Length: 81
Image 1 (tube, rainbow, N blue to C red):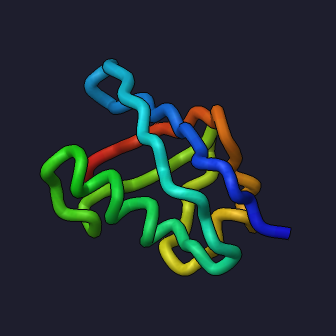
Image 2 (tube, rainbow, N blue to C red; image 1 turned 180 degrees about the vertical axis):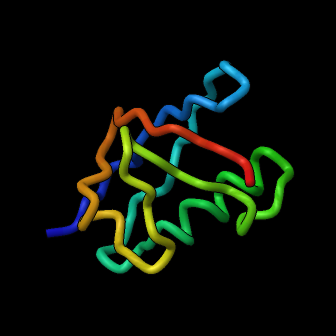
């Protein structure tokens, strides 16, 4: 089952500020790497320098968004390495 509506994901940066990212409707094979590339385009950093976390879970680049259950309105932590 694929999602047809855009999703809004809110990120908390390690600097203490928030930003929101509206993503296009996702396909079932969208990965964390694809999401990082969208963030990199908005923030002006390299995608491979970004680390996405939720509590103590570090999201791996090759895993699909649906496997991590990333959905509309979700809050994630964004770190730079």
